[in-house]
Length: 523
Image (tube, rainbow, N blue to C red):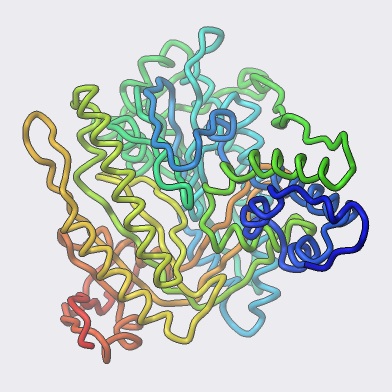
């Protein structure tokens, strides 16, 4: 290390421990300066960077994570009661294709990013002002929670938010791209009940998941919904039927809220949105050793939040912290959806001891799957929700593209299947839980970018036909089966044993797609 005959000679031994913790939290050039010339000016730059990074990372997380962060690697869960809302856009995939196709990919990426940010900013503001908390947006879908409160009817808040969101869709219902009008609309599903929030994973990678029947019932309400309407379960309806008019669905399992309210009747928002205020990060002693102490305290605050991002995404955020915006891109992706079945479905009926075992098992399984993804250089975006079990969204090709991403993706899918089939399930009611997976993989152009409110809640997201097709294939797969598209097979067929399953109809596709089952590696 370069030193001079001044205060640098009195560096605390803790500097060398701090250096190891800073490696993944500083941009490469700033890290080099800290190591080579750790004077007060450079250390102050590092502190300022960590202060900015902390603010950015908190915007990546739902409020309930950032307010109750467990120590990294500590599995923690609790039961909550409240109202959940799922939304999903129909017709969004053709819109993404219109923006990302052709020669103007860079221009299309910027225009699509602007549209997405406008859309999510509008919806997030409505959710926040209506008393809700955004939990995640995955692709074009949104999951929000309206916490139980003694001061207000959370379900009514959620329904009113849904009505406001549907009205706001008038701003986005038709988009013109290259002279072509592309219509799309939104479905909203709402359910009330108890559910588990669980922090799972390792100090290297954490995630928060929702578990229980309430989550799946909410997803089912969205799937059963209609464009432009707010669909509620009978449980949710019971909490709002005296305040709103409604009509029963064809199946009798759900109801659609009738929006015959005037603007005055729908009324003002329930609350004013409040930007999260973080405890101050201040420097009181600008000597070298004083700054080292402040840096240690800053890292203590940043590390737990950083663990909730995939390492490759964290690297991007760190490198672009000064600009506070990760550049968007349109690129070739291997998109993979993994449906894990056999753990989360038992949480409601399990005893408290069995619940501990189920959550710990899910944490271990998530950690092992994420390890395989990282070994092969992919990104496990997050755990999300399905009508049965939980989904993992994984992709290869961004932000780090490799010449052999096709091989890496296929090996990862096979490795995940091996992890799942070899995983010993917990006991529930003295019976071992059988854990299986269903995997879908697709290859194609996709949009990858940081979307949401620029100075508020946002996430790295992926959009495109390849993403949707991977999800559809996952849904069609048999237990422990890996389905891939013809394009993916053309990329990996020389290296892997694949079975041609012929042409299969997929939801949302006019033509049947040729589908293959990925079985094993040939080499």
